[in-house]
Amino acid sequence: MSNCYHPDTPSEVRDAKGLHLITTSTPNGKKVQIMLEELRVAYGTEFTHTLISIPTNEQKKDWFLKLNPNGRIPVLMDNIKSPPFPVMETSAIMLYLLKDYDSKDTFGFKDDLERSQCLQWLFFWHGSGQPIEGQLNWFGKLAPEKDEFAINRFKKETLRVFGVLEIHLSGKFTGEPRDYLAGNGKGKYSVADMGTWPWVSGYDFSGQISEAEMKDFPHLLKWIDRIAERPGVQKGISKSYQNW
Image (cartoon, rainbow, N blue to C red):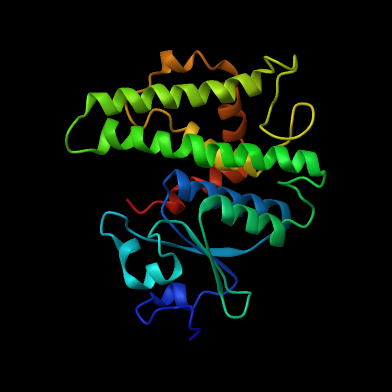
């Protein structure tokens, strides 16, 4: 057994071959689930996955913390490497897969400026969108006590971030609407979209943002629907990744 695994590691994780994803179908889990399914469509890339239970705090056990001390899903295990190599943090996982498993840059860019634009939007969501919407989900739906100040604070900021995406997709300052977040012209579907879509498409999870309020973001809504039609996306959010 490789020393990257704790003795208590479940056998289906420890004995997995190739790429193996430890996940739960939260927005963060969906990001990498979608990318792996897209790679399967594009290249025939094979992988397996293990679902863990967040309510039972499986991700806080020593076997998991050895792979990701932050105790958060998902974690990608690359068992093709020797010893097996764990990758944590969704954006880092997607960039790892892009470099090692997307040889044609199907979901990335060869041009340096387009690649920079892709990274800008990937990091924008990772740093400015995801933490805020996550807090809205917590205070708006999951917290045992309602804190109206926190709900209003994070709702306002989530809508502001949605507005940033709307400005970009609408072409307000360029005169050319976009289909995707990164790339020249109307853009190209990329990891920037994969990293953002699972959160934005779940805008109603908190119970605090209404469909009427989302009408302020017509280009963002079209972007949500456009990506939802992709077979890889549909597979990446399917029941095969749910354990509840």
